[in-house]
Image (cartoon, rainbow, N blue to C red; front, side, top):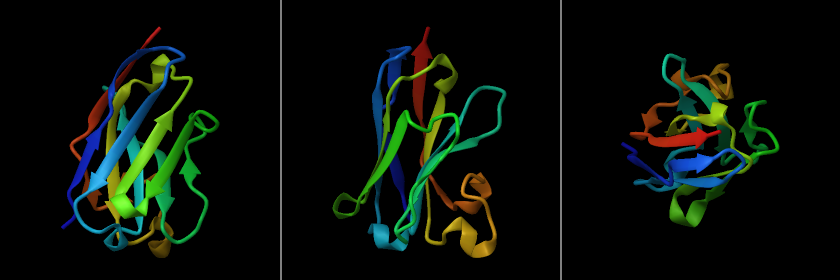
Length: 129
């Protein structure tokens, strides 16, 4: 069992920056992929970014490319999401997710929440205009 704890959410004005962090309770080796998803009120949960330990380049949603950067610190079992140039449409609850199996190993898409088995409680990000 992997427990994920997020931190770093908050309220910022448009154009601002935030850094989200997610610490995994178990050694990261047991979780091949870690990522961030978000869910705004009335909308489906969507993939924001995913990074895996298999050497592939990280995946990003088109809406955040060039603004968000996901990084993995193996020694700390931590994944970060650095967010710049935030927009009001980035407002959502952000969830950290992890899974020992990369989504593509069973034909899944990186941004399908059903492909990741472990989830954090979420951290709120609010961007005001």
